[in-house]
Length: 315
Image 1 (spheres, helix red, strand yellow):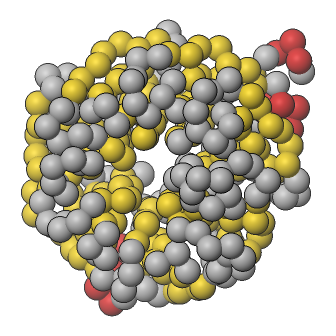
Image 2 (tube, helix red, strand yellow):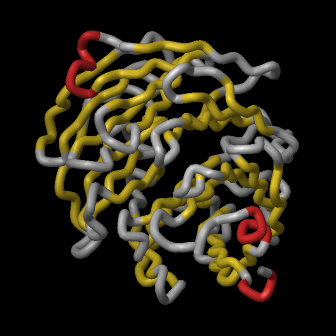
């Protein structure tokens, strides 16, 4: 099934789980799309089976807290995540036996971005200490460090060759992973009309677009090569300056974001038009939103975790 405007409009909530007492801060799908994992402010890590559409296990990170949870490259049994409590160490956890495999120490302030390479065991982290660190899952030692001169959010491109850093909510710097110590090979500024903090960066799967999430009721799509503004999307509720996560659909044709009134807003990246507003009946702001990389389903979460499917009867 191809993702079209009508398919997007047909999405309905099929499962809602109320496993968490506090907000779900991150959701990630495994690369094969068969599993999902969530992290939340009540220190829970919940694993979901996507075919069955239900939670299978709950793990806890009571001492350190858990945020920015990510499946590792091509592995559904291990994750990395940042701490939101005790320290700024990144932890590498085996989901099968609930044991830490490795600790990645070095950041001296809260980690605000984690991005796994799509092709190997490399990952990058951005922190309020104004550094981006490059890591390899096989070694506890930092593989490289760059100081982009500001608070960075960061993300790998789909080929794992380039990473982008959004610096101080005003500029995007592009680095070649193999020559990052030479500094960025490209830099473009983009400023929003309203004051806001950038809270996330993502490349589209075709590598041609970069999506900037903010806490200001506006998101923006840029040309990944020239930095020119393709679209600026607003018109969704975020009056309290919450960090709301936006995402592309896997075909790069649509951008989605949740809102503080529990609705999901969807725009076409081709036309720039809003194609749907989907009501997930979320009681609170949708903090995190992810489309499955392999299957026609997406997840949205406030304190509740919700899974969506297209309703074939509506097509």
